[in-house]
Amino acid sequence: MEKIYDFVDSFERSGGYNDIPKGVRDVISNVFPGSTTIKSTKDLDRVGIDCIVQIGSKQVTIDYKFREKDPLHFLRSVDDLMLEEWSVVPCDRWPNGKIGWTLDSNKKANYVLWVWTIPDIPTYRRWHMVPRSILRNVFAVNLDHWKRTYEIKRMNESNVRMGIAWQTQCVCVPRSVVDDKIIRSIISCGTLGT
Image 1 (tube, rainbow, N blue to C red):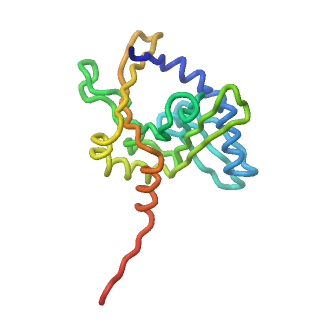
Image 2 (cartoon, one colour):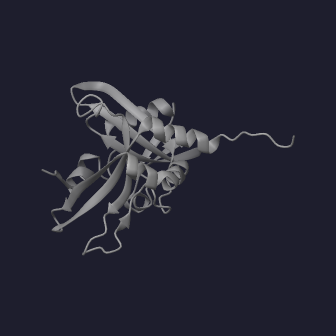
């Protein structure tokens, strides 16, 4: 049986526009010592920015993916990243669908930060952060191959208050595969001449 996720409920549990989950705040403080965070506004959320991290006079923008249960401890032993191909899978109601955050060039965050926690271990935080624009390029180049190779997960979403439902679609790519492609995309070497 497929689980139906209520978008509004999930959004509110993640902190909505008012708060950054403690697990995410803890990781940001560790990654950017001495920083302060400013929660996103609705307008920034539409361009994929969940929070702004102030580091002295500079700002870094982050799109975080917070998960209350680390799959390595609860669900399965695969250390993967759910990369969203479709935010709304094409259907009768939305024939063109809506492209997922991973591919959407309108999303402007500097980094994507995944944070996993374990409810029974309050201090546990596992996290992974990658540059968003590089992730987008790597996903676009490898999407067809990854869809043939790795699990595709469709999730039923709904907004109960508005009485609408839709499906999202993610490709579950092992974290090590994503990291390898990112590293290879930013490191270049070769030989010229003879």
